Amino acid sequence: MRRLFLLLCPLLLIFYSTGVISSTTEAASATQISANGTVMVKMDGRAPAGQEANAVEAAKKRAVFKVFSHMTRPDKDPNSTFAKMMSNYNKYVVSAKLDRKMNGANGMQVIMDVEVSVRLLKNDFEANVFGKQLNNDELKSSLMIRSSGTSNPQLTDEEVLTAFNKRFNELGFQFEYASEINEKITATRSLANPDYEKEMMKPIQQNEWMVTFAVIGEIALTSIEKNPLGTGYYAKAVAIVKSYDTTANNKIIGTIHNDYSMLANTPAEAERLVIQKASMDAAESIAQQTLQYWRQH
Image (cartoon, rainbow, N blue to C red; front, side, top):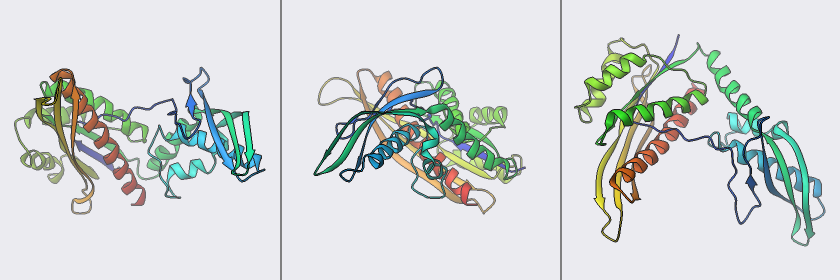
């Protein structure tokens, strides 16, 4: 059985949003998910003059795209799950009602009320990814969280572990080694990088944890300073994460090294926001890089 091992910095899940962002350039808005798992999206569609049917299809496709892009990052690769599901966008359109249309020299434009099945999109997405994993030796995974420099690292670890676990579960991965991971976090709390990363690799190198991938790193709070230009406090953090294929001489398959800053009224709020921002970005980046590599190998 192959296992995916995730040794990670504190990573916060990209929250799944059921709404669609409004725009001044496109008539797009959405209400909350209904009891039957659908959401209404007001969306515009455009086509050459006189081609109302094509404009309607464009609006429907864009509505599905908007909802789906809140579940996972859009991917133009024709072999990706996102692209394959979008090619069958009408499957997720429950209903489409014409609100108004405009036909002129610049082309045909329609405004549609499109009902999109969030439930069906989510189910198909999870089935697609998870189904592929089952066909590849029932890939399993483990997740390790590391935060540093925060006022309460243990609490930060717990919060981001829960969130990142959910993110990877949405991609179809499942986790193990939870108790061993918690013990290892406690034992290595005082170690700074790169000593921390080296220590985290030992269970893999010594075959204590049989894994296929290792993702090692941390999100560190680096400073909190009073805003020199006015009220509030600036908090800064750095996300340093690398993803390795341990079956290929620890080949690096994904990486992120980004700095972040956030301004808030209090030091505590500034800390919370910058850790959240760094965690969300790092979680999404490493999750997508790891999944993309796994799809190709």
